[in-house]
Amino acid sequence: MTVRVHTDGGIVGLGETVDKIPGAKAALHGTIAPLVLGQDPLDIEGLWRFVMDNIMYHGYAGAETRALSAFELALWDIMGKHYDAPLYHLLGGKTRDEIPTYNTCLSFGDIRDYQAWHEDAGALARSLLADEVYAMKIWPFDQFSERSFGQRISAAEIEKGLTPVRQIRDTVGDRMEIGIECHFRWNRVSMERIARALEPFDILFLEDALPAVYPDEIKALSERTAIPIVGSELLMTRWQLREWLEKHVSQIVMTDVVWNGGVAETRKIASLAETFGVPLVLHNVAGAICHAACMHLAAHIPNLFYVESVRAFYKGYFPALTNLTATVRDGCLNIPQGPGLGLQLLDSALERDDLLRQVTEGPGLAGGRRAMGDHWAVEEIR
Image (cartoon, rainbow, N blue to C red):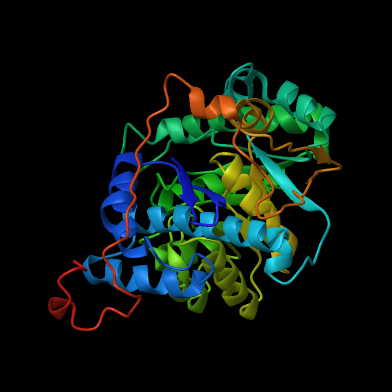
């Protein structure tokens, strides 16, 4: 879902979120837009807090927070365009000029990385190395979780799951880092068995090994394997990450700028993780707007581990809709130069036959921004 926020000064900011789009769209147009129309778009922190105060009242983490993330990204884009500055300058500048990335092996258009790692992961690793991508992520064990609902995995299934890992190591050796995505499909006893089998292959990380609702079980797993655990993209806002970090659940944390509350919330999560000495992965499997935001944040935050990226997306999907150019050199992505996020939608993207457009406009229902207070006394805010 791509969001465009228009100002009365003629600036248009871009934001986006992905997955569960009907719910996010309803939250954006039905709940958030009436609260923010007519407000000052440069008051990002105040608007974010105002919206969060209202959506938190009935439970905030889900469609509302994804919609708020998309809206908040657009506000940062507006601010960058207003001051003619890239987002990383607005955040306080860069700590690095190179953004390390790993390729999540998905497919789009002519780039069939998902099929490739199922057919010959070694050949795919060679292809990625030729593009100067030195880390890749696959999920070879997911298929075996369906039969038992993730409650057990057999030795034969583990052996089959190791096939693409062996192909990579046999073909390119240690020139390719390998991350294993688990999509929180297993219990701990099964994950411990999988982890033991993977340890000889010097795996970069195990991502979302168990559902994030079981932090104590994930911590127990992390203490029983030499492979670092990454978690979790499913935790929204700093408040959900707080317990995770206090309990030292995983050696690496992950967050998604178009799910967790937005740019400022990602920076706060990164700072919180930094106080615990924990590095951060930026989850990035959406569109070009999310990618651009991740690049600016990655340039700024000091405790970056990796930014996820999808070769099939930045080579095929992004240029079909935007003018963003994403390139990889020596394992690192380039940083857009702004202003704002540093990209624009193509005119052709707004003229597509399959485009579904929804517009909310008007003066807004909030007569001046305020905290939630006694909401029963404010008929316009509900």
